[in-house]
Image 1: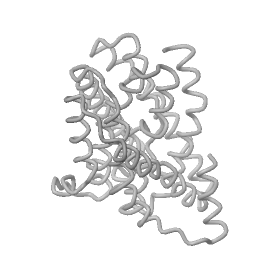
Image 2: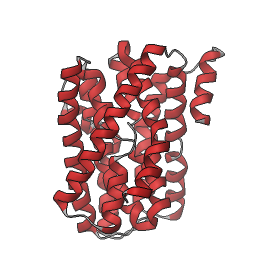
Image 3: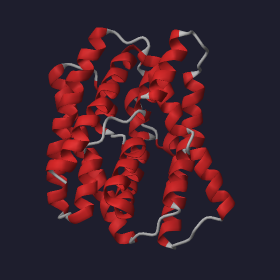
Image 4: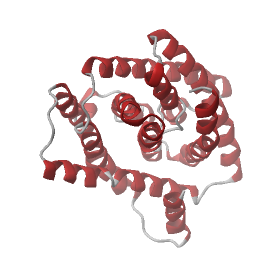
Length: 280
């Protein structure tokens, strides 16, 4: 909230803030180093990790199918709203919450989901707002190679040299505050209609997440910490990163998408404690 308010203040005081430059910095440096710094330090069962990744792919597919039908029924533009509806903020919010609730094992499960969602953010998250499908664009994304490197390090139980590990950790830390500053900067132009629409979409997103979490954990037979951490990942708010591409390719709907992401994030303050108390 402090980071979002800081971005809001930049806009209100008319201080220059280049959202396109910031988006490029996050996608090319911030996220790749964030993934490497988090995953290279973990030593978990590779087979179980891959199984959770498969479940995460099913989760995203279910979100996409349900949200597509919902957007068609409500008449909202698919290209602008589908990626924020189907891709959760499992990194900025999910990783720390899962670690706090379930320790190292919970963090490992969150990371497995994070990999799938991150690849989708830099593929589907770009393709949907842009209106075109390009595998060459995906291959140009540093995040893809960061995921491959991280999986190799995990599978071989190899650690990065300490200076490199610390360097990637520092660089990875820049992505979260920069994304939130960008969101706050955009929220400075928010109107009442956008807030109401954001509330409507956020409530539907939670209802969809609950049903998908129940179905996917049942399908894969998850139990214990694996089930609990995966449920939390399903209940995470909409990803802030998806906004960067909507703002670039669908600027007419950027304010409404920002409102949805903001309300979805605020709603997490209620949803996660309830889930930890009554479900997981």
